[in-house]
Length: 300
Image (cartoon, rainbow, N blue to C red; front, side, top):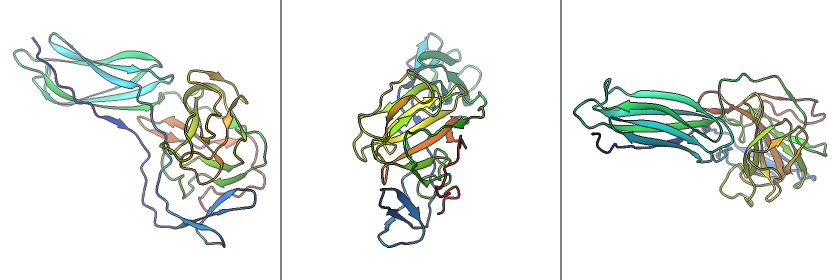
């Protein structure tokens, strides 16, 4: 008879690592409300500290469950999200396990809103099985290959100004956001889907800076497994819900100034799971941003 098993869960949420930057950036706002960043001081500019990464809270609706049965324990993962999740379970600190007490590592992809048994450990005869389990997960299935795609502008109106591009030194230097684009625009600008897919995450109730650095957002998973994320949206403006299918050009929300935002703008980024890590990937718009400054190197 197997005695009560010990389960220690440690949910490790993968986040962007942030290197320490010694440079000082200066924020300036023009007469149209567009925000710019520069390493060079200009009259009226304010010095900024480069610290907080652009992070989005990962919904904790992915759970590891241990089910004890006579002679062992099996591990199941429940995924309540509308997106596939890649999971990893490391089972270590084994005592009296059949097949030896070396650590064991299991990886699997769990489909949307489903439960899957991903492994089990049997007890050796005549003893009590003991173990610890460390659980990690990331959004998306890393196996599909990204398809080439030119993104139409995810907004109506303009023209608007690019205030920070790929590898921007204010906040686009971590794995999750290094290829993001910040487009300054008035609050209330219509935000539309730049690519079709299924809505897999939304936030609609945050005011001002709030608790989420991303502010209000919409996350859409595309058919090839990549995800478009629209951040800093106006509170109460999100028009779509999780699980909803959207098409190109469909209204999503209105632009805002919520979360870790230093001025009204849309932060647009394309991400994918590269293997238990969610990272931004390069993307292109389907037409040039005529007349906008080039911040692709992070410098004005």
